[in-house]
Image (cartoon, rainbow, N blue to C red; front, side, top):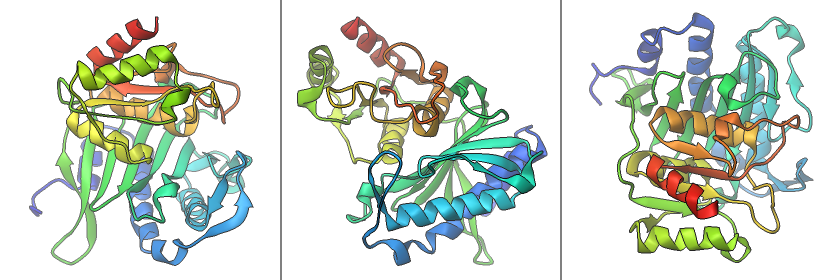
Length: 308
């Protein structure tokens, strides 16, 4: 890595954002790096409990959630944390006047832990408490724990990617890998979650056309962050539609969909819930789910026509 390359700290400093938000983003990137050192200790088994959605909780899920929450509170910048792994929002009583509320999926793709495939962490930052639509986000970022460790963020001024590397002193740093990422045209890959036998027939036909007419290749890992990273770098579409079993979709609007849509739209892509941009989805329930469609703009327009 070129030692003259911009570090995350330098990039944030030049982004023209306030010091509090800059500090929070940089702090989370550092927290996530520290957390990863502990992952091997928590790779085996589940906690024996279920989360608020009735899903088995992996030991690593539980630990990562606690570690991220504790350290975000310690920054003094977060007063409230909405997490997919918490039954109720965490209220940081010592930070009542802190500027930010955070919504996060602390460990996206935990079903991939046992097979050592990629997983990640997703974080959206708001100034007001939830529920809010994604239009109210002031920052969105994710950490991908893959073959290489990357950190992607946006504050509404483009989408930027950084990669973990070591400086000359042996200290881990995030260095700029790609600035102002743009979704490649016309798109190359797609990944769709859920059981095809439970998709709406019109959507199933559209999915087949991604093969037959658009000539896209299938790439689906079971981790939203990893599949998102594929289309961010290669163009195409990610979707998790409504199904017979999950008529409202599977992914959560606040913890996953809105945050990733913010990053995606800043990279020139389009998002859709089946009704509106994912950034406009709002519910009084912070645990609400939504169908998710992220794609190149022309693909989203074709999808809208196919499901009209």
